[in-house]
Image (cartoon, rainbow, N blue to C red; front, side):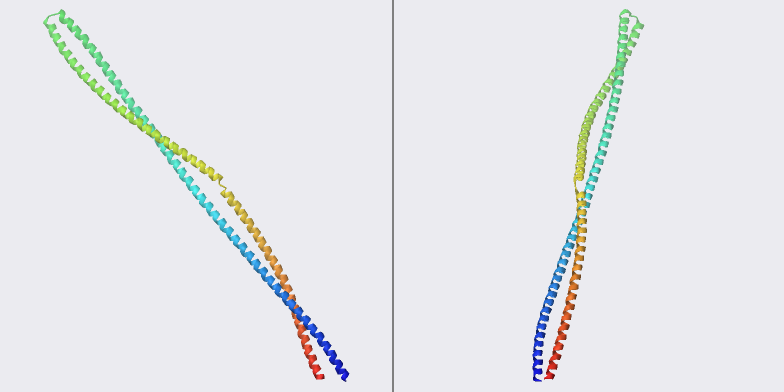
Length: 317
């Protein structure tokens, strides 16, 4: 019996030693598994944080590009509105200058016609004056002829009837002289009127010449302004054609769309990779948790068995 008790005690000590080593081994394995789980969880947290940071950075870039695109569109609309307004103002200025030039041409034509009419009237008055003077000269020549005949008759005949006739003729000559004087006065008055008209015509001509010169000067100025406006429009149109605003905007828009598509593809790829990594890590974590649970269950079973063995040993003693 003593041998059996000693043998059982020795066997129990050996078994206890083996159980202790197994417990230590299981504890070490459990610690390693827990450390591995902690590392995986930390790695998962780092990957999630990196993914969120990249996603946030990508969203900030997209927002910045959208703001830049919106600003460029607004700038393009503003430039287009300003250029359209400038072109409209220049076109209106050209139309006004064209109307002023047309009015100046009409005024110049009207002044020229009025000047020609006035010159025609003056020429007609001069022609009438010349005809009147010619008639008066002819009348004077006839008077001289009659007077010479009367003198011849007076010197050759001394009869009373002739003298009476001579007296009558002298009276008629005096009347003719008076009439001639009146006509000469009329001629003088006509000449004075003609001179006044010529003076007025010269003044009017001078005024017309000054007005015409002023109109021509104004017309030259308006032609110069019209040329400047046309040059400005041409330069502005050339500048408008040379501005690469639309092409640049289209290029930036295409680049933005391309970058957005690439960012969206990259985001989806990162999301898929993250989901795959998370799935793999989740499977690893689940496997480790299952293994840890199995080790814990084995440890608990071993401890329970050890307690039972200790109780049995105590009872045997």
